[in-house]
Length: 590
Image (tube, rainbow, N blue to C red; front, side, top):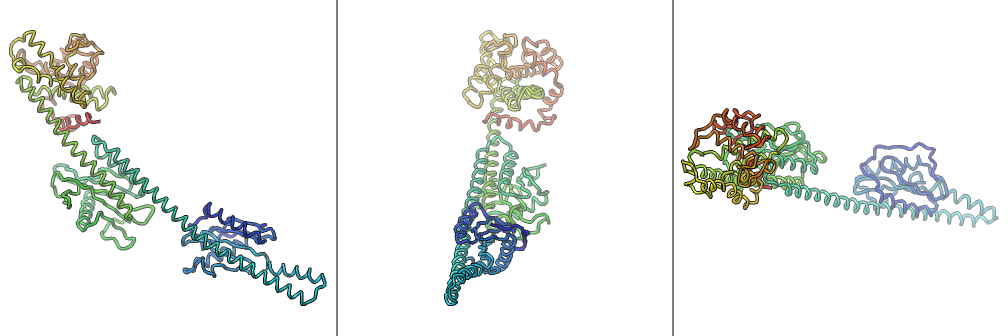
């Protein structure tokens, strides 16, 4: 029974972050049910000054206000006592000669108080009633005194037993709560480790070498900040800009301000720490003053290196023991959910930075291989073009014109970027089959015999056969095989008609014809751009596909012509044409 007429208090002096868990409440309820069998009431108050549990002994009413007041007073007292020990005898307080109170602690903080209400002078009231009954029976004074002593002794023993039980409860509660907290900490640590493993797995599975550095590094930053809460994070890489090497912010998020001067400062301080045998730059004023001067907004900072081979050997190349160098760094400022970055954060940042460095190194190696490959292709096609002085540079021009036409299709939404790249490569390799044609036939200045013409007409099939053996080249084979097919079916090698001809074959075929018409030949002079365009117009639907031809004719062909005449100096904003081949080769890798 509980009298709630009194107003509950909400003391603040002893408030703590502790909360009674469901498991703790279950244990306390079982204890209360056992204690209440003695005819006393048991209650638990939380640290917000609220009654969390009440077990009724059925003999008397307890006043909620008094229970909360006594719990509050005891908690204030015990919180001020630095030597408080729940296992000690004085951990139980007898308040108002009615309440047995003890603190419920989890680790070092109170999460509530347990109280046994003995009733209003329960021993005295019971004694009085019993003595009155004894007097009514007519017993003598000596017997009455004996009964009184027995009742007092029993009341004292009951109070001692309940006090001992309450002390054991407090001790057991702290031990079990400590174990529960430890389990919780281990569980949280395992969850954190799991998140780290998921992050590192995600990074490893997303290492697509044809992906730009910035995409992967941004994904790394975003994934890392899902686990480690920071105000700002950034990745800086060394890049050559206007012939000068600089540290450039390549990815990042949040509030972090890094200009060119700060980038240099970060790099030099990180290098200093690496030389001193440290794994990273860690600085804050939590345990000691800042090691370095930082902007006022910086409360804590971590910077870890991205290490790899230095290709340029410039002034940023900080050589390490393994002959690698610092090619960049990852930096984060202001840990949000705790005062400073710790050793766990350091390990995770280093792991992520190492993954980023591996990705960048692989990307660079892949770039070198692409350059080597496209260089080999251009050397090969140049050797084919060199067989005929009149067709020198023809393959590279056809590649560029094919790219031009494909880009115009892309502007209409008809082609994806990778199809543009494949059109370029098909144009570059469209005549590779001429490797199998007799050089005397290719260089013959007079009219070709029927047999020689048939030999020439074999080069699309020969080229297709060469490239078909290379798995990564199969997507460009149709352009090589079909670049001499015609819309009216009079082309070769298979006499395909209209829609039977793949789009890439139609594009390369038109590009090949335009360059042939505007180039000097042994059997005729070069046509002007106007003449070549008129021939294409006339051949729409017969020699050339109607749609492809119209797309080309509607484009700024004179601008295209200027670019070709200027040696492919790319004037329309798509980057350096000399590097375009390496980009196109990247689409062959899946």
